[in-house]
Length: 94
Image 1 (cartoon, rainbow, N blue to C red):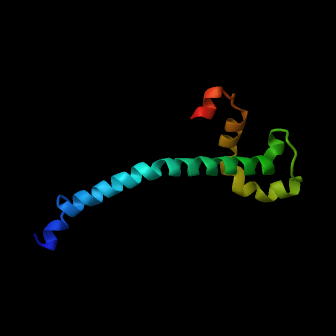
Image 2: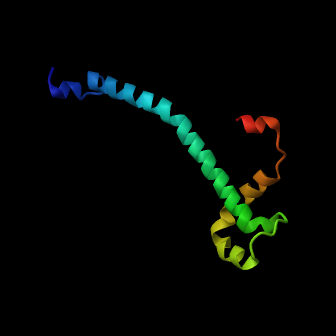
């Protein structure tokens, strides 16, 4: 076989590359979901610290909250919904 035949998607290299990508995807999928969950938790914690007075939790002086307001405005609606929704035991499992 020549190299040109092996580079085809249906060749042995294509099958091997597909197998490698499948195994990598199976191994890294859980880690990427955990990283996204951690990032979301950190963002919601940051918004709670800076804009907590919207929920009645005064933590920072209003001056700093107002300086950060333009960056936080797009996320306020989803943050309020997440913070004020009822929690259940099954939420911690998933």
